Image (cartoon, rainbow, N blue to C red; front, top):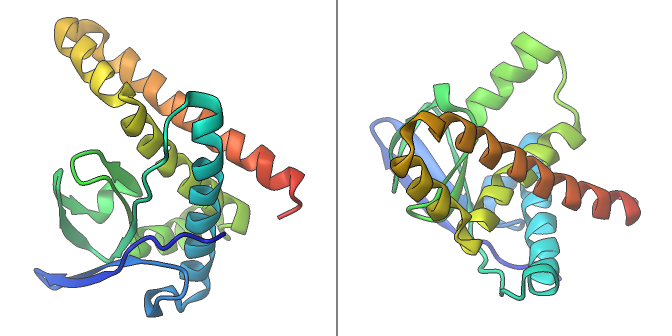
Length: 175
């Protein structure tokens, strides 16, 4: 089943942001279609898996596409940040210009799997937020600032692990 991920359209400071769902007009380009499809598949995976693995319901969230910059619950975001999750507003953000630049300047062609894995990684951060892991890391980081970078790296590695769990499941389903 495909869950709706919310829709909205906003223009701020010359940049447009749209929270999208798979059938939304914002999913019109090839890259957007890949990201939208991955968003729905990743959320379907966590809606099923989170209760099984962590005895917690998965709250759906949205993917926000923007170009250049946008305002978030975590402050202003620019294309220099790349894709990210904002725990304050529970949204996943993708600067489409950043992904296109990445594709053209650095790695030639961003494969479907690479784009999908980026989505899964960012939604892994949403899972961390749902489970209270982000809050725990913030607390221990403030108690022990000299370890903050190590805790941050561990948070990223866990998001990669969560993305890998989705990728394994997607591979088993032959996506």
